[in-house]
Image (cartoon, rainbow, N blue to C red; front, side):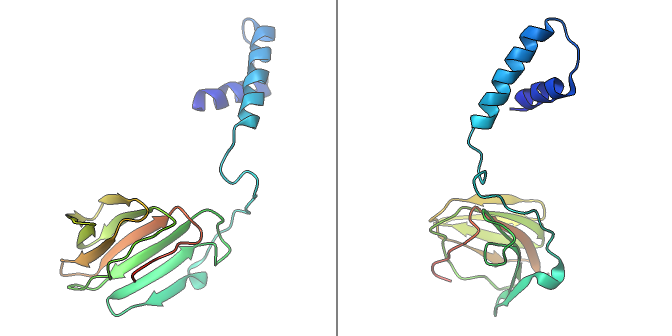
Length: 163
């Protein structure tokens, strides 16, 4: 894909090359193929937007809090949900699953035990886990400080069951 983009860019800039007429024809063919290639969100243009902390949605829980930065409900994305999760020491969020999206969790701070179905894994700062749609999971803070992690979902309308 990168090769294709470089070739198209070279053509647009008009770099002189040996066999330029043949190359131009090949580049035009590649450009046409690129334009036919379906890309996610191509039919639904979404304006790029900066979401400031004043516009975050905060969801306080007994075990910690969720901060939503980007989502369909906020009007900042048509394809994703992004937020942060904070879990107090010794606490856990309830087991749950997402029927309509995958989740990626990246630990920024703290020490957690993360459960996916019947598997448990300890995670610390810098660790990332990908959780497929429909898998029951939760995180428990096993450290002495508040755990903080980024969470992102493959849907702008993240659905949750069991929380």
